[in-house]
Each structure stands twice: as C-alpha cells, then as structure tokens.
Length: 235
Image (cartoon, rainbow, N blue to C red):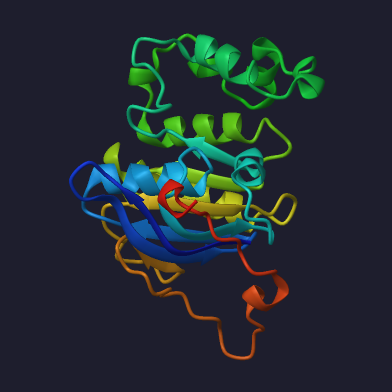
C-alpha cells in the first residue's frame, strides 16, 4: 500500500505541492484532483519517488525509503518530465523505454517482438503525436509494466489528451483490478468523471477522503507506520 500523510513540497514562492494525504492499495485505482498542472505533476513525481518531499510522511509497503518507492513505481506520461517527444516514432520510443528495464530482464525485451506480442505492430511507424489518446494510454502503460518489478503506476494528467473519459479510465481500471497482476494505480486529473464512485483524494487536502467500506478491515492496519522524511532544515 502507498500511504502519504501531510505530504508537501515547497516552491520558490508558494507550495509546489500543498499538504496532501492519500492512500491506495494494490488492486485499487485512486483519482487525485487539482486544477493546476504543476501541482498534479509535483504530486506524481513525489509519490513515485522522483522528487523528495519537503515534509510529511510517505511509505510503500511499510517502507519509508525513497529508493524503495522509486523501484516499485512507474511514472507515466508526465508533462515536461517523461512524456514522449512528439516527433519520436513509436518504434523508437519502445526501443528507448525497454532499454531502461533492469538488465537481467532486458535480453528478452527487443522492440520488434515486444510490439508484436503486445499488438502494437500497426502503430509502430507512427509518430507519438499521431497516436489517438486511448492508444497512447495503452502503449505507455504497457511499456511501464515491461518492468516486472512495477507495482505502483502513477499516471500524470491523462485527461489532458482527450475530453472523453473512455480514452483513459477503462484502461486504468483494467490494470488496477486485474487479478493476474494487481497494481496500485494513481491518476492525477483536473476533475472527476461524472460516473466515478471510487476512491478520491484532493491535492491540498491534508485529510484522507477515502473511506473503508463497512465491514472491511482497514488496510492501513496491516502496514507499519510510514517514516517521516526529514527536511534539510531539521537536520
């Protein structure tokens, strides 16, 4: 389980990430809302272990080390961070991303057979900017999961590519609820889909909004307490 309490990141003038609390378990999709893109990206970077928080608590599977969080997570399509370059072909994107998979798995992950096995051969020669939003989501999440150690998927602002929820929400639900490989999935979004009834968090809300269903044990009870990241000033 990913658990964050009062997580925040200071910016030059105001908080880049205001105090925010959330939690998500394997087999669950959490949507986190915020109007500002910079706040959505800051949260995505922080909960995937790519940015050190200024303060607050965060832990993955009872471990509060950033390295542990980073190794377990994949950051997907974050603007100005790791979104695909628009004039990169799908084939070249796949080659580049598979090269980042740990070496012990890399030998079997060549772009041509990977594209065939994952049924992306028909888009291999397209530029990434030509991809429909739904196909883009399928491709980027499949690449993120090429690393068998990925247990936490953090998708940054998938709704920026399309006004249709159908282009991203079903895919994320499928990944979260797939019994074969249960993942904890977090997506930062501008606004909640009208039909959404699942777990929700709000950037800038330091109190968790998700409730445990009646009669179900609180998954937090099975986790050891997250460790506090100390700021440089506190050292």
